[in-house]
Each structure stands twice: as C-alpha cells, then as structure tokens.
Image (cartoon, rainbow, N blue to C red; front, side):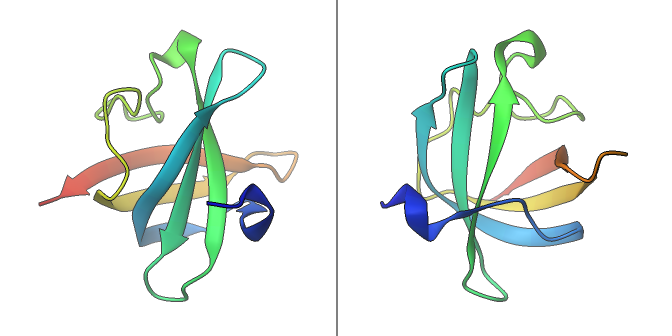
Length: 92
C-alpha cells in the first residue's frame, strides 16, 4: 500500500469499496484506504476516536475491521467541501 496512490476524498453518494489498508493518524484518527470497485480509484477517509472509529451512522467500528473487506459506503461533503463519511455496511 502506498498512500500517495490514494486521494483525499471519495465519490459522493453510495458506492462499493474494498478496505485496502488502515493506519493510525496523528489526531486520534484511523485513516482508511479504500478502492472504489466501480472506478478502481483509491481514496482515503478518516474515522475518529470521539466517534468510536465509526462513520456517522455508527454501525461499523473500523478499528475492529480487517483489510480486504467489502463495504457499501455512503459519503458526502461538508459545508466546507471536505469528505464526510456518513455510513458503511459490510458486504458478506
């Protein structure tokens, strides 16, 4: 995994992503590296300790998830234009 191959951000709306890797950030966050199955593009999102390392819907604790998993992801934009990790559901 090379972080430079992943862009900050994500598609808007629902998409299917594979969790390629994760690493600890500097602000009590966990950086998640996903590949969008539809486009093959890599992107990264963060989850934070104050949210129990979960997206806003609170369903999945990514601290406990292993790379290689597939997820139906829901992402959007904040008023400032930054990516917002709204939700995730694991695809079995």
